[in-house]
Image 1 (cartoon, rainbow, N blue to C red):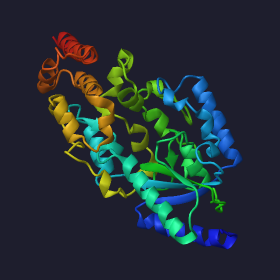
Image 2 (image 1 turned 30 degrees about the vertical axis):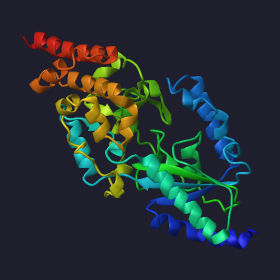
Image 3 (image 1 turned 90 degrees about the vertical axis):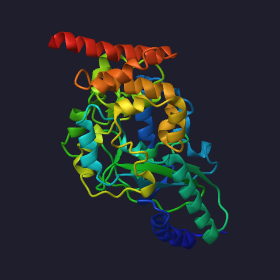
Image 4 (image 1 turned 120 degrees about the horizontal axis):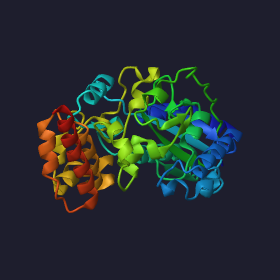
Length: 361
């Protein structure tokens, strides 16, 4: 039998356990909070305007985002956690890579291991630690794997505030993953944080494709992360030049944020593998599918598949034109690829070289 004193003692222990398991911070939100309904209303409006693009999964079961009991019957509280991934030499290396058009820029969260598995494993361990103290209770782990208002729960749990780029932001920045543990326990809720963006609008100005159409509103259809990861088809030609050398995601709105200029605090699991933080575009374009699958085993990048990988690199190589001869050779090697999607983007990139050469000639 659970009682109020037991819940208070448990809540006092949770932060220590979270630290032991490698989380950066932990907070608790009540599932009946009025602010969550307001967040859901804003989300519904975002969907109504079609700003989710072709991410149909974001519209499916949208009502569950405001009905946690649909994911866990009798849900009463949600434990939110953050897990930092800001790597060593993070800011300097990221900016350096963006400044070299012949290098591949990969969003910093994807340089290491897949965060889904790590978050789930640690949240499961947290739930079992709780059970060892108070006995069995109903719980469910969510790690970017269910319809959850992640930022809203994290904000209500005192882990930060919603930045104008829509990500959870705190005094430790925004380079962190979010995870949730739904419970049927009436745990004492944490106090929400106040926002500290003020009049700053650096993230809006920094977005290469102007995807942050207003403070706290992102149109995914223009977002480089969406275009290079979620979007399955042809990338709109009008947006390709702005993508630059970004082949998987984009961090520009975070890189300019003053709150992200802190010392690295990232988990070792997310350190760069296979030198992806300094890889050359031409070298990555030369990978065969077997190399893509082998080298990116255990990486979140693998989920986009080999064809989108080549599509994205082709666009980046086209944006190198014409100062990097290796880029043109890498493109020509894939000019007759069996995939129409790849051929189209390779052809566009090669044309960029020709057009630039004509202008220079």
